[in-house]
Amino acid sequence: MKRLRIQAGKNAYGIIKDGGFSFDSVSTYVGPAVGPRWLVASGFDLALIAGRKLGSRARPVLLAGSSAGAWRFAAWVQPEPGKSYRQLLKAYIRIPFKKTHTPETLRDALVRVVNAYVKDDAIPFALANDHFRLAFTTARARHLTASEIVWVQWIGLGAGYLLNRLSSGNLPLFFERVVFHNGPRPPHFFFRDDFRGKAVPLNPINFKHALLASGAIPMIIAGIRDIYGAPTGVYRDGGLVDYHLNHDYSTREEDVTLLFHHQERVIPGWFDRTLVKRRPRPGVMDSVLLIRPSEELIRTFPGEKVPDRDDFVTFIDDPKTRIRNWEEVVERCAPLGEIFIEAVESGKIREVIEKIEEPSTG
Image (tube, rainbow, N blue to C red; front, side, top):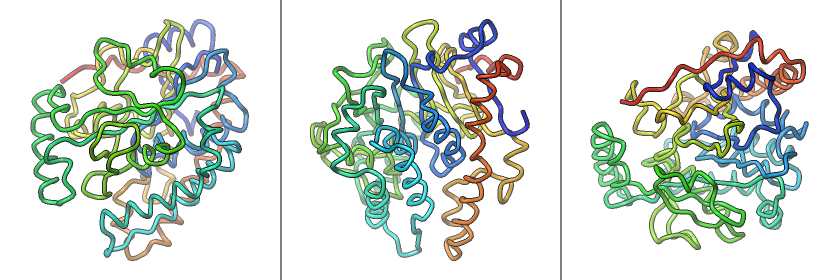
């Protein structure tokens, strides 16, 4: 497959090789905190939404996301999910970025993006969705990282980075994982022995605040303070604690965790980006089915790269070029969902599936 790579952890690989793949086996769809890189997932998401490929099983599918992943999944549960998703795409691609921006004005810009695709009167519908459950991950800042004074926050983040290099177990000293969810009980991964964090029920009052907090990038976007129903404090980007994929979401051996990603490497936390050996814990990737654009497709993107946050700075004086480049990437990735669906329905997925290498810790 020229435009798509499909990989799987050992359990998911065995399931697919033995009998193919059914969308009914997907128990969780994970949305990583990847900034503008999420644009490569748009065609995949829209095809699954249009074809109603997820959410038909007896038990609801968990949509677990941080930052950009949470933003994507908020569209999935709207009354008209395809329309809402396209509204998100349009508003996100056109986010203004100027030299005069401050963390507060950028937060205001994100408020406008959220309001463009999540309507207040549709939130009760989203929370009552029978087919999907939501889990928006945020990071409640502690000590210096809770400050909005740039140099103070910078010192806190620097200390967090250094201590995280020694051990990821030090991260809770700086950020507490807080997951906002709907449904009668917290998501099932909360009940694993190695899970650390708090669960907060979503409601019509805190829905948008949780969504905004999940994408509040430190130093760049002001945090969201004192979210209704949650512990007091400043909430920041959920990618700080759950960057790409950081939990075993399966509950049964036959469960598959779906992840559309922009690259092969899966990174647990934001501070782990430069730690090449830092991977998800052993077993976390076993149930994962990872779909990503091929290197060949990425070479056709403007600049031969996936969109990222650096584009805001690169094109700060030429936003029209950034917008045009991002729209071109969305257009080139539009067929990816249909390509995947065809591979599933034809059984070709059994021929093209690749096994994910066993993760190692570091």
